[in-house]
Length: 344
Image (cartoon, rainbow, N blue to C red):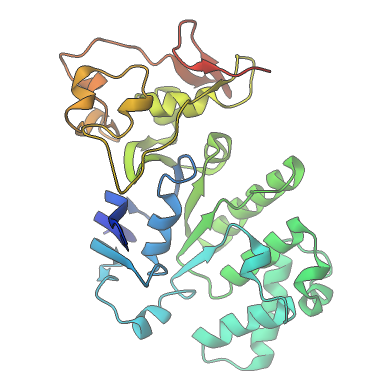
C-alpha cells in the first residue's frame, strides 16, 4: 500500500458566476522516501492541489474524490481530526517564509510550539529538539537562531527556519511549495541540497511544487506535468526529461536557458471557469490536431510508468519524435521545433 493515494481529486470554488474547477480529476500515489515533482506554470493548479491534500482550502472550496494517507480517508475527517494530521503526518513548507513565520515570536518558540501541539513532551524537551532541528537545517549558531526573530534573518536563513518548523514533528510527507522562489542561485542550490539531506535523514516522502524543470531534475524520482488543473504527463523523471511526449512539456523545457535559442509559450492558461471544448491546451499548442479542439485526450501509455494525455500518441496521429528533450544534463531543441523564439 502506498503512503499517499489520491484518486480522481476534483477541487472547485463557488464563484459569483459559477463554479471554478481548479483541480480536475488528478490521481497519483506517493511511496515512503519518494520525491514527486509537480511542474507547471503559475495558475496550473499545483498549489491548490497540494493544499487540499492537507485540507487547507476551506471556505468556498469543495473537494471530491479520495485522499488516503496510510489507508485513512482524509476527506471524511473532521477539522479537529485533521489537526492531528497536519504537522505530525504531513507538513507544508510554504512558498514565502516571511508570511509563514509569525513576526511577533522568536524562531525557536515557533518550532517548539509546533512540537508541543502534537506531542506530549515537556517544554525543555521541545526546546532541545528545536535547537537540534535548527542545526539539522544547517543554521549556524542554532542556539542564537532559536532566540532570533524572523526580521533578523536573511531570505535563505528564513527558508531554513521555515523548514525546521515543518520538520518539527518528523512528518512522513513534506510538501514543499516553490521552496527556492526569490532566492539567488547559490542559496537556491543550498536549499535544494538541504531538502534532499533532510529527506534522507528522516526517511520522508517529498512532494515538490515547482515551475522550474531544473529544480525537478535535481530532486525528483518522478515528475508530473500539470496544466489547467490536470496532469498532462507523468512518469519517472528520466522518462519525462529524456523522452517528453506532451507539447506542453516540450514548451516548458524549451523555455529553460541553455545553448539553444530560448522559446516562450504564447498566450495564457485558460479561464478555469470557462474551459474551451476539447483539450484545454489546444489553443496554445502549435502541434494541435483537429481532434484536440473536439475532445479531451485520454492517457496514452508510453511505458509501464510513463503516460501523456495528447492525441499525438494516438496510433492514427502523425508520428512526431520529441523535438525537445534533455541529454547529458542539457536541454536539446531540435531544428524545426515550433516554439516561439524569445527576443534577447
